[in-house]
Every structure is written in structure tokens, then in C-alpha cells.
Image 1 (cartoon, rainbow, N blue to C red):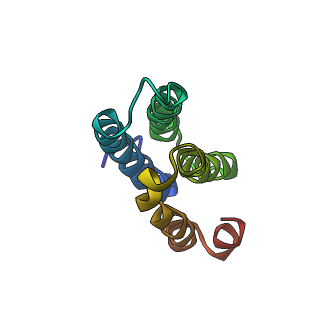
Image 2: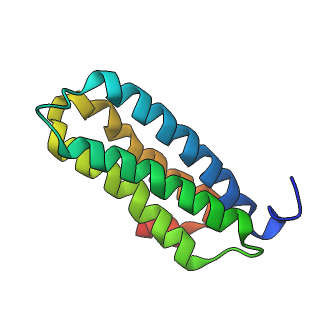
Length: 119
């Protein structure tokens, strides 16, 4: 890895890297999938998720130790984005329902039962 991605925050680093990849895929698919003239607010949600993903990646990459604050912020971002997309686009975003289970189980495996219960 590198000195910045120490073993103290490796789970957070792996999650941040995955989140950036998902954000790029999400923006790529929603760019063609959504009628931007009808749902103008979607642009802000998608770009916000992409921006927050990069900010969280940089924050986690520079951190030397794991942080509860980072874990709760990432959980809020990971659960909040699909909630907003599902609420606003309806059946077009139905595929995102699996994200709730994935985020909860992923936090549980990476960080323990406490984070599984919070998710």
C-alpha cells in the first residue's frame, strides 16, 4: 500500500477507493439514464456524491489512524445518496435497493457489530 494507507485505517481506505469507483460508475450510468431536463436536482445529488467520495478518499488517505467520525460520515453518505435517488427517481433507481444491505453488511464486516447495528 504505502505509508499513508497504514493498517490502522485499511478498511476505511478500501471502502473509500470502492466508493470513488462506484461514484464514477453511478455518474456514468445516470448521465444517460435520467432525463436531466425533467429532474434538474439529480445533477446536484450525483455530483455531490462524486465530490464527497473524492473528499472522503483524500481525508482517509491522509489519515494515519481510523476514525469514528469518518465511519459515521461515510455511512451517512452511503445510505443518504441511494435514499435521495430512490425518492426522486422512483423505479429507475430500484436497482439501488441492494445498496442498503451491501452498506450495512460491509460496515459490519469491516468495522464490527457496532457499525452493523448503526447501519
